[in-house]
Each structure stands twice: as C-alpha cells, then as structure tokens.
Length: 330
Image 1 (tube, rainbow, N blue to C red):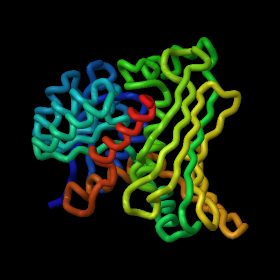
Image 2 (spheres, one colour):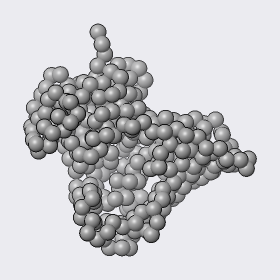
Image 3 (tube, helix red, strand yellow):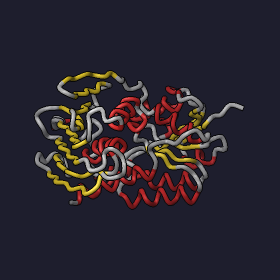
C-alpha cells in the first residue's frame, strides 16, 4: 500500500502560492486534498488554480474530513494559536507558518495542546531543510573555517514610498495585535531560527530598538547581541545583528567568522555561499528549489512514516520566539 500523508490547508495567502502549497503537492508521499478560507471565493479560486479537489468556507468542515492526516496553518500569526488548538483537538498533525505565534506563551500553549492530543507540531522555518543551509552546517561541523568565533546578520531596506506604506502587504504586518510585532518580527525570526539551527541556541540576548522614521508604530531599526550555547561547534560564538527598514540602501547578508576564515551568504539573493579561508575565496552555488518549503515537507513525510525527524518543531520555534521577545524587551 502506498504511503501518503494527506494534507488540508487553512489560509490562501501569498506564501501558499509558490513557496508552500505546491511543496505539499510535490513532496514524495504527500498529497494536498483540501483547502479552507473564511472567504469562500478565495478558497474556491485557490483550489481551481492548484487542482485541489475540495475547498471549504468552514474550517470545521475541513477538520472533520476523515481523509486528512495533517493541516498546514497559513494564516496571520494572531490566529495561529487558536487554529493549532482546534487542529490538535481534531486529532490532526499540525504544520504552522512562522512566526509560530504572537508570543512565547501562545507557543507553549500550542506545544502543550499537541502533546496532549498526541499529534506532531511542526513550524515552517523551512531554511532548516534547504540544501544550502545543510551544506553550511556541514562546513561548520567540519571546521572548514577553523574554530568558530562570531556571527553577524545584517538587513537594510528603504522605507516604502508614502503611498505604499499601507499597501504592499505592510498593513497587518506593522500591526502588533495581528502580527505579533512589526516588520522586524517577521523578518528576523527566519534569520535567528536559522542561526539556532547552524550554531546552537541563542543565549544572553540583548537588544536596542527604535522608531526613527515614524512611518508606523513598531520599531524600524534594531541592533542586538547574544552568545550561542548548546554543545555543538557553535558553542561560545558571539552573535550580533543590525536590521534597519528605513535605510537608504538595500542589502542582506550573514557571515560567520572562524579562526581560519569566514563563510558568508545572503538568504534573499539565491544560492551563493562564499567561503574564505587561508586568504583564498571560493563560491559554492547551491540554489534553492522553486518551492522552498518542499525539502521541509519531505522531512515531515519522512517523520510521519517513521523515517527520520523534521528539524523544525514546536520546541525549536519556541526558542526563537523567546529570543525575539527577549530582544525587543531588553
């Protein structure tokens, strides 16, 4: 009998069009059967575009469907906790979009509900399964740049033009009630979770934040420092970040410094990884797949059928949520 993990999808936002929805369809042993949205026309249109056989305007109908094993929650962060509790109560496994929830307390409630229901809880921090990040992790473990010393993440972006600040997807993202924070909350969680994966848990986190441009209520510039813990090669590495969404330039990069050189990459510009050691630089091209969630989805299928373990779970995402909360509170 063929092994198939059968999915339902809640939410039809941008992330589901290319990054995640097709990934659940294309992963081996994975099938997307149902989609639900509170806007029936949106659910119906999404189902037509992606050849999904069933759509629902009532989330309860999807959760009651006997042909669904797992549900992917791709809604705004303010609904993640409530929907996770509902999915777990229905006995379905949960994959929830990042950021996991509005705050660590909600994350803890989600973990407890899934544990009580006996269902897995995965979080869509897909970089943990991308070939590029697996290669970087292997390079670090193999001491390709020697003993590890420091890591720095930097993201600079200009403000949107005034007539686009309430459009272009920004409106709910800069409302902490709906998003959990501002644009930093959304952007930095991916980067910091990836550093947790590569180097170990972030500890002793301290941050400074300000709103310098005044375009919206939350912060538009953040700096932070931390130390990596755990028992891997990243233990003791000092970390820092600078994020500014009101800069006059646009760039994003991460670099890890070692005793023999450095590894650098951009998470938003494709598959290049630069390795500088002993004065020489080489560039590896490890392109991301067209549907970036697909490698993570494949690990979920493997775990479901007893082959391996998905690297992005509720517990690891809770660490990232605590880092974000502590950083903006300090």
